[in-house]
Length: 156
Image (tube, rainbow, N blue to C red; front, side, top):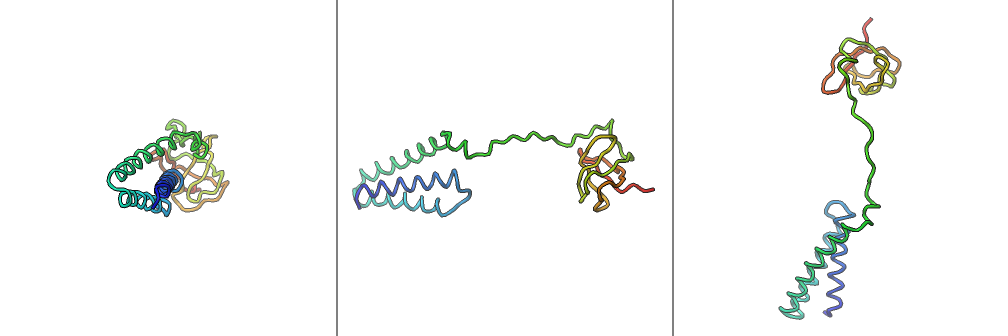
């Protein structure tokens, strides 16, 4: 096998491995084919050209793999493909002075079993203990546990 074909096998294998690492999640055909192509290229270098060329090709492949992974991770091309959105929402912070068990409010959305409710003029995410509750229904706070407000239908 010619040295050109060996180099093409190794370069193709490296490209498939970089594609596997950066684009395709998990173990897929690209990664397996990349390892096979690199393995065949190195094996053909050892079998066809002897120990000296085999060692040079093996070492060059290792250096090429590290360099291609380093430069592909360093390049700004991947930054355009990555999700860079920031989360600007906040956790439902419950102020113990404003909301207490026993207080009442009104559902703004359907609680199935979680939804929005207005309590003391402010919107909160609440969780129903008594199944589904439709919107615009009066509710009563049962308990507050780890910043979660648990409610039930208000009894008359």
